[in-house]
Image (cartoon, rainbow, N blue to C red; front, side, top):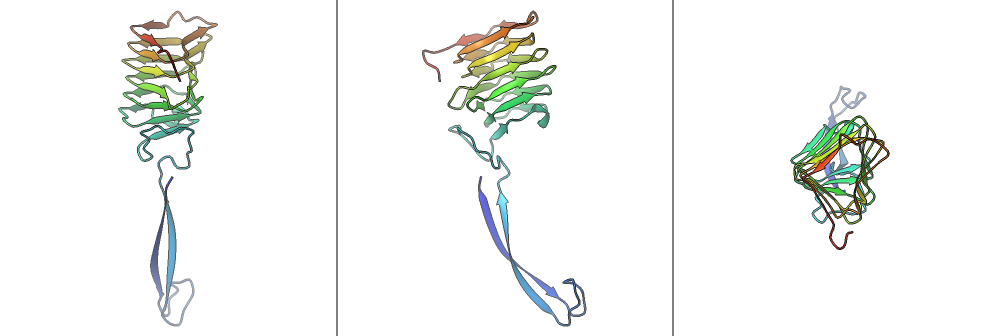
Length: 205
């Protein structure tokens, strides 16, 4: 966060016989005041992160700290700069990441999709800043669709759901995760994983 202090002078004149200064005066009186104004960058004001991406840009990056999708407009699309998620990003209204190539997760951050809403990840890349993140948790009755060349990377469990939900992963890659997909205790008959890669190199974060 940057602070700028702007100092400037201004002059007021009280004219004889008027109440311009709040009371009647008998003669012209001129007073000069010095006023200091603090101008604070509105972008990412007051946010402190554990890790900053190497290409971090305070003016252009978006930081979501324990945020909810209802606070946004339903979609972040064609965003070339970083979207940095710290804490929990809760999808409590259906939401789409479209053509977002740099969704950067802070350590232990996670995405939680609440029922009955849907999270679409389309042609987007989610990865850790420098320490593995928790992953995407999909509640029973919620839906997650990962498609069109998206990559989910560096998560402890990339996709996790219990109790039954709708999971579609198509034409995408789950990369460098400890565990790609964990589905348990429910009916996932409507879920599909196809035309996608699960890849892990010899070492991960």
